[in-house]
Image 1 (cartoon, rainbow, N blue to C red):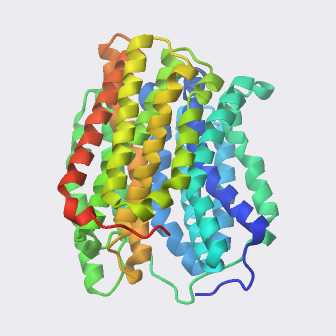
Image 2: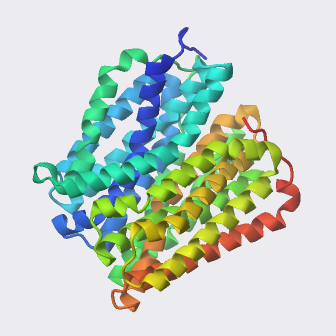
Image 3: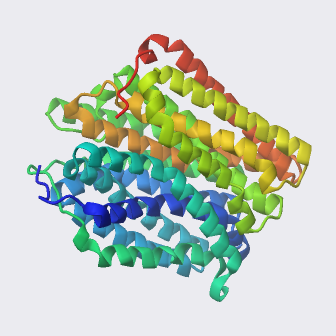
Length: 472
């Protein structure tokens, strides 16, 4: 593997972490801006779900491809291409005058994010050693909480401030100067790439894209359109598409190639359990953020700034938990860490249900803080468990494929959450005659059940999850 003789240095590290924050901040900013987008573009709730979901799906589909392209053509080069594409897409999002234009720009944003993110961790890994490497990885791991806080607060302020009368568009325009700054200072970034080029599984990438689209669009549009034959046909197409993807992957594996989803990795119990965590937890997490944003603004009449501030406690708790998680992981088994995270999160969800029931249709940011802090603290422990459990039994030779598999699934479920669980929430809104607090309580009960299923699976997998994982 070719590496730069010089480490990124402080300036290069800041640029890389800024690039990492861009896609994460954009997710929380978009959630804050959803109600303003509705008023401006007259979107339906289903279209709002697609605005969130298409970004996640495009991100997921292109993630493994972005990693391979960086390995082959240079991680700095692909990082800068991704930043440029993300900046252009952000500009197009801000200029969009229709839902269709916004959906297309959000998809382009997801592709740009998929080119940015894989290059960051790989660059840190190959250019830093010892204490500098450990410190950079800790910063990388904890940046999610910081990004979340910045996105919620800045996004809410930008929308509410209505600078130049642009409203929600400023939430996207703010990305443009940041991207330009990264591009202007690119000399501080080292270039690295693999000496031997690796093959990209284009067939697997196409199959994954078709599978996610056949799942996403029916789940998002089916309830609103009363499940026409086209949505039913798309769901039925999942079976032949999955069979085609598996057959192709087996053929590539027998030929000594590395498919997008290596079948031999799916035989590992730790990987299968990681997939279960993603399907239950990340789907619920993204659905939770979407439903909370709609409830606080459309249901309770909060301004975007007030709505953003309502998530600050969650973000701070997430950051603190992520910062201390390695110390806990060094002392306790991953099963204990996962169950602890689930218990804390479920406690927060139940506390949030109680808060909504006691407060009625209106609730303030301070009243939400205790329950959302519990939710955020538990979430960070679960996220740490996901990667460490999922990667536990993967060999060094399969590390890249395994990491790409888990990251792809995480982003895919992030995209599917608003579509799948958002439909449940919107149904509950209709059933409760527009009472968002009651509908959110019903959604939270659904999420609690999902977390209890995951906890039951962790308890039954006692032997497989009993030992400790390395803290590094």
